[in-house]
Length: 253
Image (cartoon, rainbow, N blue to C red; front, side, top):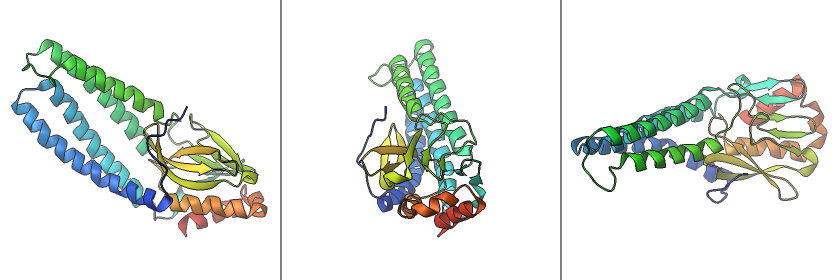
C-alpha cells in the first residue's frame, strides 16, 4: 500500500524541490545544533539526545543528497548495466546504506531517551518526558522504515526491457508497465515519506519509483520514457549494446 503525502507536481518543479531540500537539511542541522545548546543549558537530556541525532542525520542527508545531485549532470554510463533481460540502472549503494544507518541511529536515540528519562533527574515539563519522546521517535522510525526501499545494496533501481519498464525489481515498489500502455512520467510526489517519480500509463494507473539515491533528474527520466513510449520499434534493441548506448545518450542529453 502506497500513501501519498502531497500532490503531484511537474518534473521541473520536482527537480527544483529536490535541490532545495539539500539546503533545508543544512539549515535543519544548524537549527538542531543551536537548539541542542539550549537543551543542554536547561538539562533536558532526553530531548538533547534526540536532537543531537537529528543534527547528525541532517548533516549526513545534506552531504549524501548533495553528492547525488552533483552526479545528475555527469555521464550515466557508470550506472547503466546491460543484462540478459535489458538495461539496468544500478546507482551507488551509499545513499541507501546511509538512509538505513540514519533510521537505526534515530531508533537507538529513542531508546537512549527512554533510558535517560527513567534514570536521570531532569526538570519536569511537557517536553522532558523521556518515555513519551522515545515512543514518539520510535513510532516515526517505524513509519519511515515502511517507505524505505527494501532491496539489497547495489541492486537495480529500474530496468528497461524490450517489453516494458520494470520499476524497483527487488523492492516493495516493484511494478511493471508494458510499452503498449504508453508509460509517461507524470511528475514528482512524496509517497510513504519517500520522494518518488510518478509513472502513469494510458489507463491512468500510477507506479512510484523512489528517486532519493538516483543520480538522475525527473526531466531526464521523463525524456527516457517518453522516447520509448513513442518509438515502439526501437524497444526491441534495448537488450543490446546499442540499446544501452541509446539509454545513456537519452539520459545525458
